[in-house]
Image 1 (cartoon, rainbow, N blue to C red):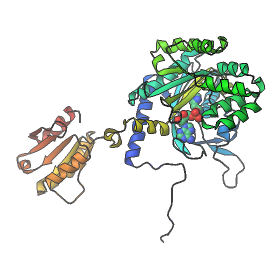
Image 2: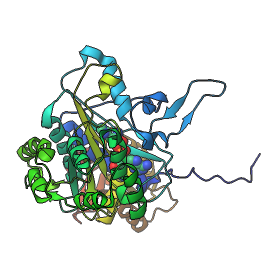
Image 3: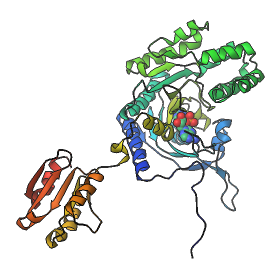
Image 4: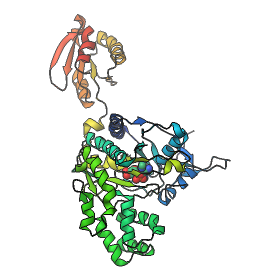
Length: 442
Ligand code: HAM
């Protein structure tokens, strides 16, 4: 029985047609490759968890965006995972004392947040997570920042396109308390500063007043949040320039050295406006933004030294980040880095064209099968036409590297191999096709 209902996909979700899927694979390939090159191992966990895994320490922002549910007839509360860090901390805690030092893990989960869908924000996204447990000090922070930069570089972005904006929760607390925020209101102040860019000034000033900031302090906070300093300069200069206690920025001085050793300072800025919305961060916090700040953050992360022990595991220093595919995709598109070589997906090694003779038709499918069995990506037309010109057009339309023509020469056991990139062609024995295609990198 038919139905006259038509279905739309749920708000804030995506369908991946082949070109969008090719972009997704391209991004994921760069992510996986960068993480593996830096010695991280891939993990994953369940798509849904017990609800309270998120209510313990992720912060109100994420909790208010949960997709939570009970199974029909059940009474246990679950939630679709809105982020991966609690799952990772739970998995690490379960290892107990056998957790390797350091533990370097990465994952590429699908995440679900009931946000109001808008540019750069969806209800389902993929997020690359790279986390390092067991490395104290600044080496862990610099290590994960290096992985993020490797991937961005591989995707074609430069330090003129994106910036790693770094701060420290201790620094932020010192600055906020110098402005008059009491210790008891610090978490709320972090949340407010994190939302600053998305709020009208009056609303920000009103909420800031309720945390103990007067009009002059709000003004100073705003000024500080916009006084970014290039990574090559000492973060302590930021304190001097703004008449702040130097100790406030000393925590970043060690990180500066660790970043310098990895040649990363030219990608970084010291930015007192970065505090991050999630409640579990304990030290360094950072985000990656496009240079103009036109999009939302491409990535965000930081140090969360207390989370694994909060979940019943050993005390381990931990840091990491999440990079989402939505903002990154927008950025790559804006920069012209998603041309047909990406959206077209994998190129066929060879397209087999048939003249339509009985012999060519007999050879076509067995030859395609044998070449595929040898590992090549092989296509041929599914149309009725055997016009060679039309088949050649179809071959270049799908970006095949070579066309193999089963033509009149077949009666002498010969075929024509046309190199669509180089424009050359050669006649060769059918039996040699495998060898030649493999030798040419097909
Ligand atoms: P987050 O800042 O919530 O951090 O997310 C990281 C990145 O994921 C964001 O910068 C953004 O690119 C992307 N993202 C987040 N929400 C959405 C959404 N609704 N739609 C599209 N993209 C989104 C975390 O999730 C931390 N757990 C990251 C982390 C790992 N910290 C330490 N380790």
